[in-house]
Image (cartoon, rainbow, N blue to C red; front, top):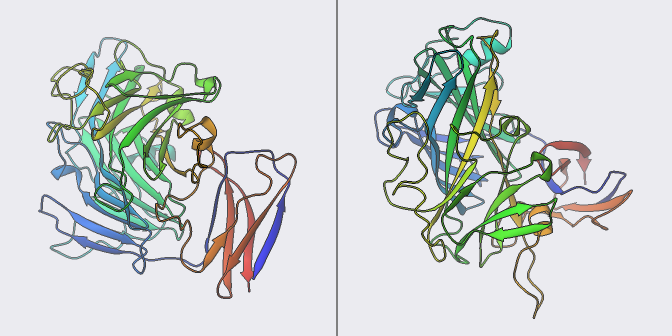
Length: 437
């Protein structure tokens, strides 16, 4: 049955997703003492997402790199080889100086459904039950750990899978979450909080540097060169980064973001700054908002013992060519913690949003435009953008003002949810929720 919906909404960078409304499940394997902690398929039958994970205490880099995800596949297509936070630092006002923190010391937090030994570093938590120091402080508490569990917890919300771990560095408590969405988005979330008030009552600036090793379709049919782009919607410019480079998003009002795409498939992921990240601009300590570098095996950080990141070292920016190379994208998430509230919890992190360009007309240029990165769709190089048994037509017309029509089909009678998202990955409206024949 095909249903038509007319939406009276302003023109947006659309991400439309149709999915069964019922809850989903996952499979997870665990090795608490192994170099690789485990593997997750979600949902268990016909997975949308499949990936390996490493707990913080086993993570890579000289100071660890938090909760790592590796070999990340969406709809069976490789999109990320590794993603983690190898560099953490903080700078204080008021005489407390600066610190290079570590991300391999796990802290206790509260969960439900901890697996029995020897898999007791993993929890099949009920959705909404994971509690960390950040949650305590957001609720008006004053530091302390919420529980004694150390490891990795998973919550299944039906259309979202959340993987969480909790870390300590002195009086700090750092929470890292990976949010995987059924429509192909990923939200890497980092939270800065404290368990005690030493120095944290002074103004200070936290920074977490994400390292995204995108290997889109590598070793698979349709594989092409991975390319990095700097996109400025306000100036309507798209700049391919062909040399190792570093920089900033400039004026937050410009809406600058970055994209990594497979040249052959014309598909990939946008890295879009969050509003929280944009509140702390670059300075002489934080140095960069992004780095585009060539992949070097085993180089997971800057190799520095100093407080601040050192982007101009052999591990990172040497101004080498990125053409025909395996590329790595670094992104800074920062938070300003104002004095007077040592128990503040700051939540940051970009959104990774899939995009897919339609086939280029014969004779047309293959250079991407700003619009190519704004018209998003679940990434699938085989062109099937929805699970088997579903069809979702493009909104017609698009762009539109004041209305557009969306049509979808389902092969079998079932409950269906059709949602509209903006270019930041935020749900704008639910267009259809209910039974479809």
